[in-house]
Image (cartoon, rainbow over the protein chains, first blue to last red):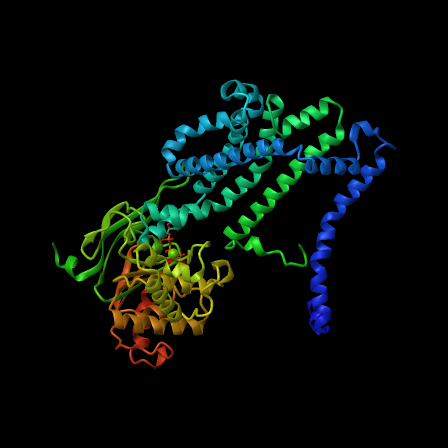
Length: 277
Length: 267
Ligand SMILES: Nc1ncnc2c1ncn2[C@@H]1O[C@H](COP(=O)(O)OP(=O)(O)OP(=O)(O)O)[C@@H](O)[C@H]1O
Ligand SMILES: [Mg+2]
């Protein structure tokens, strides 16, 4: 394959290289496009349109929502809740996971309690959070933030705990003090775990915020979806869902870029040759 | 304060070590009354069968393992905590995977607060010395085992410790590179006068590099003999057999070693 390429004239090669990413993009989009086409066909023929709407209607509705600016206030509220809950959850999870990871004695006492709280289905707490933090954004931030926190906390904690004792020992012989051990050994060793936790937490942040808004709220995308479904407007429901989907995909792409940057040192990060991916 | 304390870089006194056995089994005795000295500026090798406790001795000198009984002194000071003033090349290279090769080499200087420009310059020198020029930006997983080992040596050389512990540093290298590294080590030591405690399996290497070879028995290990090697320096690492007296020195070490093999065969 490579040999063939090498013997070809240069312009063919560059043309191929130009087409390659486009081809890959098509491959990636194909299943989605097939699904949308299937949906479009089935709607009104196999399934009642009032149940599932159809892609063209949803696209039209999406266009309307943005063109008229109708969606912006909801988006702004939900966006603020998502960002706040994610940032707060990740920060606290990182801090506490790291601190407890470095203090095994304290961890032995605290861990069972954290585990117990972790086991509580947070969704079930949604009504309580409304009572505690009000009907505004903070009940949603706290609900989603708690979910994000636990995921990041557990991953960072496990990461710090999993570090090879020999590496720490050697760093100490080379002259590292406690602070330097943290900066140069524990944090980088926990980075892959942190990033895993951050990635896992993205959909949970969305779930937490939307469930919070469903439970009771005065604004937001969850309220918009809830209202649309109670007025039998499936196109709007799906439009709202597609906006959430886009948000998760963008966040995921950002997380991937962060991973590429921070985990350059890991063989698995560049093991896949460009043709195969 | 005894004579030993002021003369020796390292001093092992009546060291015993046993490790807790698996559940229900008795503890495993590894070292049984080990005493020897590494005089200042001298090169002492330790050879002995695999698993006899050579790495364990180095761990004690680095302050990473508390011996069951006995004492280790470094420059006359009792080693009771992590020893941050000693150079250590562990048996596994143990580079930090998240740092590039040259960042690994720079690491001890970074920890000592050396400024970036000087750090880079000194690290580069050490990298050149172990012949890794051109691989500065590689991460450890992109280096071969032997290259990792050489980087680990450079990381030790870079901060010029006065006492050096090396655990089979040349084990993973091919014969040619090995001789070059032995030659460079000898040259460097002649210039800097560091004291070295060196672990190896290779009798030729031990004889060629050392002022004295400590031969250990199988577990629980005792010292079978301390063989002084007084071949003139510098020694030509590429032609061991051309050195007058090499064969005799080799035989003295080998005869002690062989006695241990006989015991094993009989058992
Ligand atoms: N932390 C530990 N816990 C239990 N046993 C240990 C521990 N460290 C070493 N040992 C045991 O002590 C013995 C000596 O180990 P050591 O690593 O010092 O051997 P060595 O002489 O360096 O061998 P080699 O030449 O193969 O490297 C071995 O039998 C090993 O199983
Ligand atoms: Mg060993």
